[in-house]
Length: 120
Figure 1 (tube, helix red, strand yellow):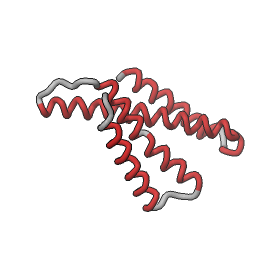
Figure 2 (cartoon, rainbow, N blue to C red; figure 1 turned 60 degrees about the horizontal axis):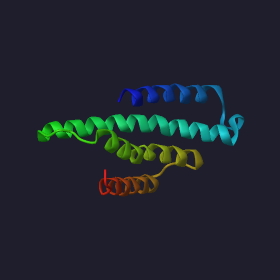
Figure 3 (cartoon, rainbow, N blue to C red; figure 1 turned 135 degrees about the horizontal axis):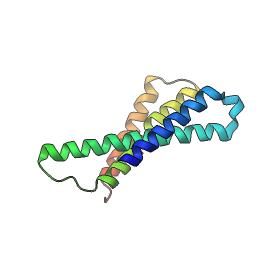
């Protein structure tokens, strides 16, 4: 869990530096791709940490031993980290309205369903 926290902190400062130092027109397409990739790494780290804590808390409440925390946290985190990135991309194109939020929510439900039915 420490490596995900460190990765999230480094990504946060990289995103912050890109936001204050450059404009989208001066960065170009590769810079924008780097920005969105760094944002995804930031959201992935936060989602993995939250998922692992959720699975640990769920196991303690049931009185069981938490198993496969690394795999489950990473798979669910990868699915969940996509939502803020999609909303950020939609906001940069033309704005986010309720219909887009509902679509992203439905996609997240579908992704989490697929992850839950995969063999971990």
